[in-house]
Image 1 (tube, helix red, strand yellow):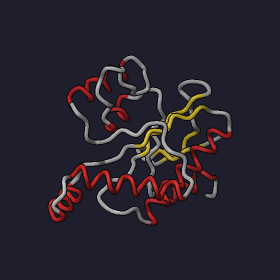
Image 2 (cartoon, rainbow, N blue to C red):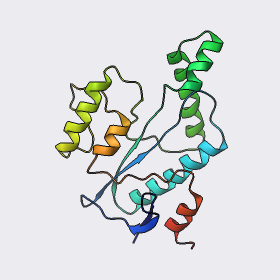
Image 3 (cartoon, rainbow, N blue to C red):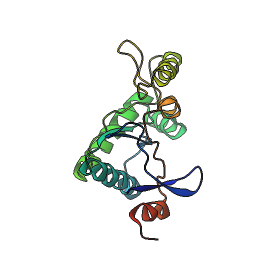
Image 4 (cartoon, rainbow, N blue to C red):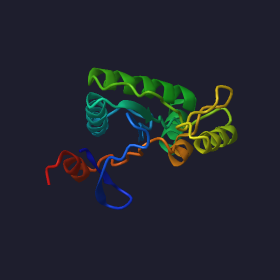
Length: 176
C-alpha cells in the first residue's frame, strides 16, 4: 500500500484513488527566469520516481506540471536585457526542458502556463471542468486551464505538493 504525506494535515495517509486504475498528479513546475539548478533537478527526480512507481504499479498517471512564465525576477531580467518577458521565458523554458531531458525525467502529460490568452475564460473553464468532473481539462474551445484553478477544482486528481520536503519523501518510502 502506497502512503503519501499530506502537507495540509502534516500526516501520512494511504493513497485513495478516486477512480480505479487512474491517478492524477499536479506538481508545481519551474519559474523560467534563469537556468535550472540542482534543487530543480532534485524535485523533478523525486516526482519522476513517484510517477514511474505509480505507473509500474499499473496505474494510468496524468501528470500535470505548470510553467510560471511571468514573475517579478523574469520581468526585471527582461528589462535589464532589453528583451520581452516572453523572450526570456521562452529561452529559459527551453533550457529547463533540455536539463530535464538530460536527467531523463519524463515529460508531463500536460504543461499549463501561468500566462494565458484570456485568464478569466481559463478560470471559468477550470471551474466548469471541475464541476463536470473532467479532471480540470478545459473544453476544446476554451483557453488553457489556469494551474491554480485546475488544482483547486480537479476532483479526479490527487494533489501531490510536498516539493522540497525531504522528510515527506522518506515517509513515502517508509524510512521512518
